[in-house]
Length: 162
Length: 158
Picture 1 (cartoon, rainbow over the protein chains, first blue to last red):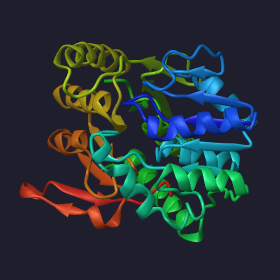
Picture 2 (tube, chains in turn orange, blue):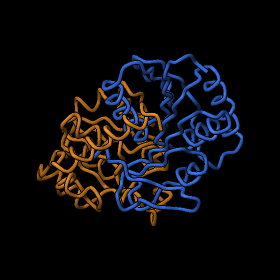
Picture 3 (tube, one colour):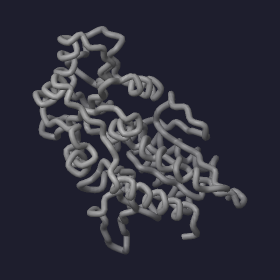
């Protein structure tokens, strides 16, 4: 099952449209969380929703064979947690897909963690889907180190006297 | 003030902000005793074991909704009397931090989302005036500002 999730702010049809068409062409099962998509606005399909409760989100996540998403931190963290193959394409400011280019920054700054998960355009995405060339985002040594530091420091700040 | 009890209020809008906050605060929670954790987010369907308030979501440019959120924040803060408030953003976290400033909550912590890797978020920049601790998850975004208003790298969820 293909789980597509693009958050709730702004439409992201540059990703939604090609993934929908690919699933239809290949008779693939799917669940889509599409936010304000114009492309699928008139399609009546119980598998396509605007927003999801956290319960159905994690349900979809655990059933997914591959998760396709914008470069949102929620999805990236969930893919790590559920060990799911992930394909992400960042929203870009020049296409009015977000208020700024922080998603492009995210994939650059987390490039080691996201190795093999990132595509920059729909053609690359379809090619990866066709080939089944998928990767699970995996924490590196450095990620574990950063997390340990964060938890230690914040615990001290919260419970300490200063 | 609550008598000797340490109450931490953790606030974030639902989605990536919440995912980070809940992961981090749960880890801290399992490390600490004698601290009560209360949560606040924007999704009403969420179920967690701890006490949870649901605040309406809004973006920073919607002034009327911001006012509603401010009233709600006051209500939560007066009821729970936390000594610590921590948020990863976005707009609801900012409103909560400002309210906590006005109500003199002792520690007011802003932890900017790891998604902001090139600059501190818009709400994070505004929050800086009202926090006691202002943190980033990116080393290269550490910043010493006027009047020693610092943004400090504290580690990162990844």
